[in-house]
Each structure stands twice: as structure tokens, then as C-alpha cells.
Length: 539
Image 1: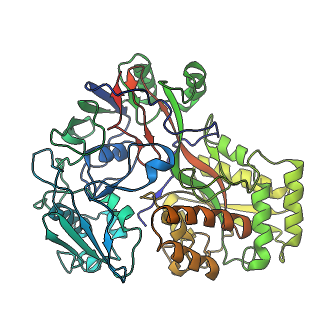
Image 2 (image 1 turned 90 degrees about the vertical axis):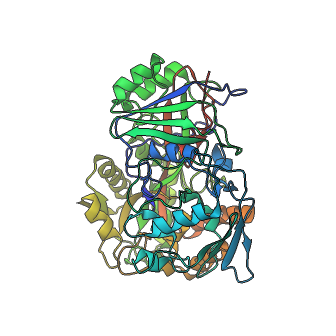
């Protein structure tokens, strides 16, 4: 998958009754300019080349009207895919391999040109073309003919066809129930868009990119032809690049800027929380979960975790893990403790392993489980990156397991070498540490990394090398479901796996800490795209 590995030091959060839309107040005032600042520039405004981060993600969400998209809502509602340009969900053929989508006629680009099926065909073909090197190709392989385009042997994807101005047909090599979620990644473009990076994409959403000066500024203007259901409260959005975190914090407090996309100095969060409170209605400081999970993965190819006789060891480690200590690595309000695979927006409430820290009771429970393991290792090898953060995670893990009588040998690698090693079958590690943030909000983004049928000699994202036929079948069964039944089934499978055969020891969910100006109103945090620019307003 084009999965976003959550490797930046971006904040994750304590369980403070986090309700992701705190701060949304009364009817939105129209007009004004939303002033955003960032220390670093965005990688690109080209829809095929957008590299997700807390700056480019919100900009893309504001400027693109997708066939299917996420609503301007927080929490679980904000990650439930809805039709946008599409009239409804696809009509699926009996064999599940042909999906036909009817489009609304009301969408227009900021130029006034109508958004049609041809614009989506152009986007999908362009993203597949090897000249663009778009990471979105990861989600096209199951579409008929896409691999030929990706390989440079064709210009058009045979399985994608506009049957008329407002009807699109997509044929796949197998039933693809998450196709609507994948289509949230593809922004419609002009049919004559060149096969090279562009700096002036057509705006089809509430806003368009009016202009960009690399490393200096990006300006969004309201799309005058937008007639969709999403908000478009401010007249324009100005992103200023090159503003440091300290400078940005001061400017936000003075109401000279509205939002620090790169965050404020980590040492300032305690003061800001004390001064402004957390998640107050109409407040200025918000703490909200994102769609990511940090975890330790057990290598099921190794003797310590291979076979059902080693399930007690995996459960023992989950009982012995000091999750509060791991969260504290990221500082004040640095993470939301978890014992589940899925993030809060997709999971169901469950109490599986201790979240409050290691107690005499939890340690006794861990030792009792370890005693039931068929093989009781005296030492384990843990692979990690050389970053300060990941090294700290590894040291805490080693301390926790020492109390079980297990020594942990830590081996450090650069990020590139690390990804290559942990994705290779036969690599001699027992445990690895990872942060995972998929590219679209369907839970398959987590469970495809636990489907043993996807394992190959190298390049795996199933870092646990987990291959249980029971769960392979369950994952593939649920992946054929749709709607609410699909969401419930993923959440239930998460709890079942973590209770009965945990592939991981999850310890923390991603969280965003946002400080906004006193004139920033209508704060909405989408768990997937982060700050919802289209919903924001000025007081």
C-alpha cells in the first residue's frame, strides 16, 4: 500500500475524553482570510504527487471534489466514506468485478468547466503513468489494464471507461469492496493535463489553488462554481512557508496568524493547555485522535512467536507493556494509549490489556501467561530505527521484558535499511517497532498488513509475518462486505485478534495538538485529513 508510515514526531494524545470536533460553534460566519503558517513547504500541489503531511493533506481535502470523500465531521463519522461527485454508491455486477458509477451534473471546476467522468478517467490514467511516479499506483493494480500503464506498455487503463459524460465504469480483476475508499485518493483533472508536475491544478472542491510560490506561499480562493454540500466559509486561505514554531506560536497568540500547521514548540503545550483549556467549545487548543497506530510487531517466523503454543507469550508481553511510559516519550499530551489495532475512529470500545501502566496485578498476570508458553525465550532481538524516539521506545520495551526475565538485544538501523530488513522473510529479528497510518480510512489498510496471503520474500508490510489461515479467511471475508456491516466486522475482528492471538503489542494512537487564534472559529478536525479548512471560519 501507499501507506503513510507515521514517522514524524507529530503528536499523539492522552485519553482526555477526546471528542474530535470540540470547538465547533454556532452558525458559521462567512468571509475573511484563514492565515496558516508552516516551517516547511508542501511537496507539490499536483494531485498525483501530493505527499501526505499536516499541510498538504488539508489543502487537498479543501480543493478536490472526489467521486467519494469524507464529510466535514470529526471522529467516526468523519472517516465514513460518502458519495460526493458520485450520485450514490456504485452499481456492482453479479460477479463483483464491474462497478458503474453515476455522476452528479452540478460539479464544476473553478474555471466553470463541468466535472465529468472523463476528468476522473484522466486522473486515474495519469496517476498510473510511470512518468509521474505517483505512489497512488499502489491502489490501481486490481483494475483491469492498470499494470500495463504502470509498466509503460499502454497509455490508457482498459478497465476504466467513461460510458457518457456522467457515467463511469470500472472493471477489476477481482471483487473490490473498498474501491469507493480507494477513489477518495483521485482528484479530477483536465483531460489535457501534461505528464509532468503541474503547479496550477483545477479546483473542483470548495477552493482552488489560486497561486503558489514554492518555499514562500500558497493561496487558496473560494471556487465560485462549487455547489456541493461542503462548507466554504472563508474567502481565501493563505499558507505562509518558513515560519518557525516559536514565531508561529507568538503570532497566533497575537492573532496575527490563525494556525500553525507544523505545530508549536513541544515544550509549550503544557502552558498552552493550562492557559486555554483543552477541547473547549469555541476554544483555542484542541487535542484529537488521528487515524494511526504505533505498535510492536512479533515476528511469527521466529521460534519465540511461531505456532499457537506461543500465544501466551504474546499476551504476556501485552500485559507487561508500560503504555503510559511509551506515550511520555512524545512529551506532554504526547499520545493516546491503546491496546487495539484500529484507531479510535474505527475501533469499538474494549478493555483488553492494561492502559494505566504496569501494576503488581498486571505483572503477575503477565508472568502467569509466560509460564504457559510452550517455549520460554531467555532473550529476544528487537530491530528499531536510530531516531531518538524509536530508540526510547525500544529501551522501554527492554525494561518491561526484563521484569519477565527476558533479555532484549536492540539493533539499530537507518530508516531505509530498517524498512528493507523488517520487510524481508527470514530476517533474524523477533520484534520491531512501527507507526502506521494508511492512505485511506477503510480498516483494510490495517488488516491487509496482517493477511498472510500477501506475504512475499521481500517488501512486506506484514512486519509480523503473521499468517493464520483462520484470520486470512476472516480478513478476506470482511473485505467483501460494505457499509455498516463492514465497519462492525473490522472492529470485532480487531478485538478478537488482540484477545486471542495478538499479532502486535499496540501501545499508542496518533493525535494532533492544535493551537488556533482567538479569531479562528468552526474548528473541525477530520481524523483522516486533520484540519478541515473548508469548515473553518473567522469569528
